[in-house]
Length: 387
Image (cartoon, rainbow, N blue to C red; front, side, top):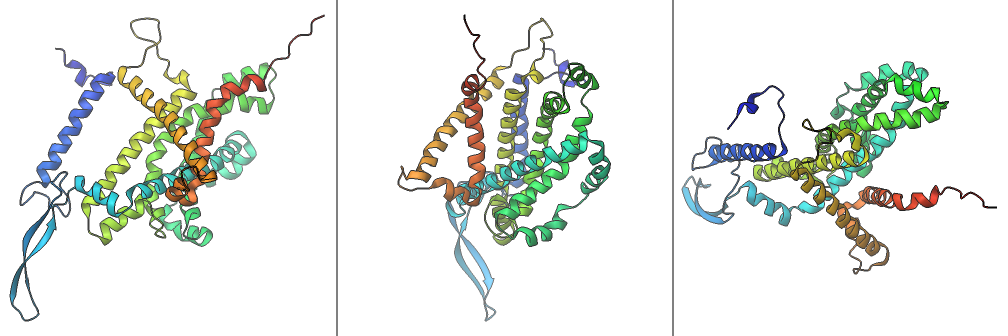
């Protein structure tokens, strides 16, 4: 068996190899974690690094202390075998995990939507027109060095401590990085495409619409995926202001107030899973809207390289999830409006003031799903008149 590919500089890795070695790497890290936290006297005490697994049972242990009279007293007290595995159940039963998760998703995606709506027109003005570029480019470059935690007081005085604060704070944090990136992407558009449309007689707006917007959005989709991690970093700060709920608020209470590192680790794992799923969703959308970026020719033939089995399975799961999600959304929205399920109002209960984020996302999905059926009627070509 030829193993030279493992150490080849920038060598290719197949989807099967990536899956197998990814599982091996995960198991290695898990074994190291178990080794450091297991035993009566673990290498790293469980107050810092909790066990990954335990039986989740409550046991009776002896507790010795000195009472007010100076006597040594020993009594039995109940003690829970805490672990990260058990913490998931505690978070669900006692801490409203699902609702806090929905609130964090609402804050996060709300910040993303606002950041994109503000950043795109502003960045295009600066990137395309010399007047705005000369006026605002230096300020935009300087704003990147602002520590966001230092401006929380300004946001509190401007928006209070409720949902508007959290969404606008996240939007501002994303904008600081997004606007310079969009300006950079505009400058990277090759002149040959601009000159071509000018030769064809295109106006400025037609040039922006047919050249700059598609070229920038095609590259910007990769940048948005990278900014996902930044948005989840700032959400801890945003949710810590005014205890309205969310995973950031929950991790703060679990770690500092309750002294439950097992819950903290469980929430961190949830953050990782959300980030991985969100990254796959963005990748799926990128392939859907910009398929030309993934049309790579096979090295052994002139045909386009086909996706591996693993990628096809993931894409199928995502497609099915979209339709299932749409079906659930329609049912829950009808319940919000007409009480078809008995006035459960699940969307309002879980997302509270961020319901508009849910409606914006799903209405956008419905629009793009139905667009191919509507466009033939909107852009129907006139039939030639017959004599």
